[in-house]
Length: 197
Image 1 (tube, rainbow, N blue to C red):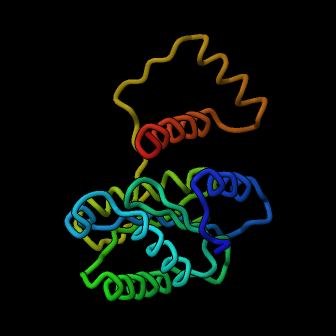
Image 2 (image 1 turned 135 degrees about the horizontal axis):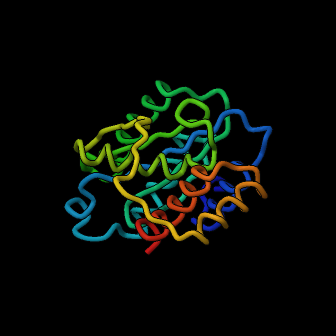
């Protein structure tokens, strides 16, 4: 299926979408299979992962899907016709279909991020969806969490003078705010260490 991508191709497409000015609606959903080790007796087998991705592609035909880690998948869509209620209904159909296929009650936690609803910056959507997924997982199985914006300030942040000077130069050069550059750098670092190691 053309909509099932490997993580590298998915990230390339995400990078293309986030930089396009003609995209006015952008949804990223990160999902995690609950109790996968109990259900499958260990890591998710390749055949099961393939079946799950195929069913996701079937239930979400306008979305691209990729695996991220053992039992986590990410979906991406730029189609303006999708709304969050419809996505919730599709989630239930996906769980029902997979529960029937695996003859076990399967549920997923979901983290949802949508541009421009949850962020005015498309660059942050992937990170926001993972943050929302982690919040959903902390609540319990089968949960859906939409991004909640609650900016926080660090208790302390120390930067060298040269770092701050270079940040100012870069900010001027690429016409982005310094805080936006720092958030993007932190998101990139956290994604690499949390999801790709």
